[in-house]
Length: 158
Image (tube, rainbow, N blue to C red):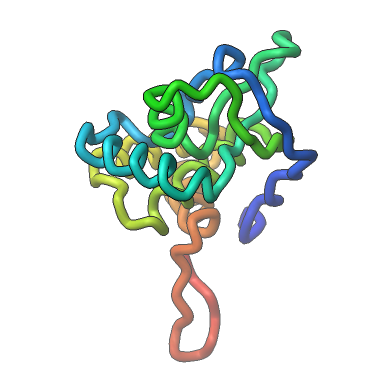
């Protein structure tokens, strides 16, 4: 059986990055931002500032470009407000870590849609070796998303 959970990403440093150096990751689970929600988020940022920095990772082979793993709505809201630099946490993570990070951020906030979650799980399963088979792939997905239950004997099962 695969390990219960992958290693968490390594947060390297915080930095103010130029908006033009940021792009939303293809692994970000959010399909599209609700315009009303975006307006209220922008208003909140305008009133109290950015409370949670974006989490980004460097794009391979493009040293000055970063992709947003967590915070695509915040990026859109900050652009709407005219910000040219944004506070970001730069993480070292692979594709699977980036996808799980994006899923967790949206899932625990409670506003991920069924379509977004389904698409993200499908992407995660496609990252796994085919020879594992669907049952093992589902177990790894469940473990990485924290979907584990204890049976009456105290054994954890995805």
